[in-house]
Image (cartoon, rainbow, N blue to C red; front, side, top):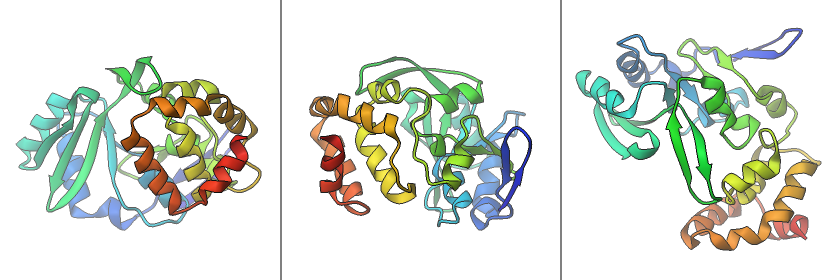
Length: 236
């Protein structure tokens, strides 16, 4: 993984990572780009590679619509499962390895629990709809990283920061309150982001509007990295 500084921004290349050069990964990327469309790795696999952490899941984004994604995969004899097709997500299974592929999108309506999305071909717009700057990084098949929200710098300095206005991002999905503390526990360094804490406090009561299953699943993840009492301390 190579980092280099420029006058305006910090850029990075993931280098020849085993997960990036694996035959399954190459086959899926080849299928998705067969007709000339772009495909990039997004989210955790990019973030964790830059942070020298093990990569567990490989997520891919593309401007190609989900029905066309399925056809491209099947044309290359790769199994395609429409796991969340209404939101643009298809799971590809290649040589027993799963990849989650999602069409670029942006939100047109949110209520703190669900989002109505439309598909787009705008990579920056897709990045801006995500939660934290460190989760909005993408990388092309050569490993070149695209950073629209200063996520590389935030990751380097241990800053877990919402993209844009923290309260707006939380109002899109109240579960992001808990996600903030989970990611802070794994990637963050003190002090905590003031805007994130203020927004979390102001919307803490909205957590009761979420399904018990979503809250439970997120709390279980938090238990692995952070004492829940620490969350309550900051929410008061």
